Length: 76
Image (tube, rainbow, N blue to C red):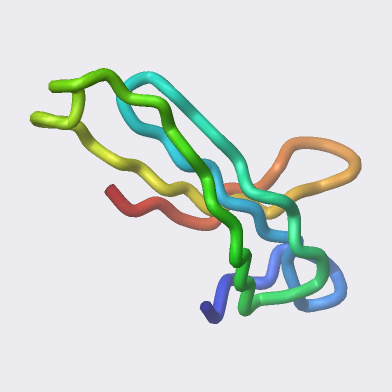
């Protein structure tokens, strides 16, 4: 919530990138908001024993139609 504005409109077009054990999934982009709520389920297929010592990383990015996406933050 309260993401940094990265677009001229004063909002962002955020999506999240979730990574664990070499797998990465992305949420849908939610346009023109600083307070995204995805209400999505992302399923990672992990082998037995892979979770021991595993790190779950969630990055939030601002999607851009032209140019590179803008990094907004990360939690591990």
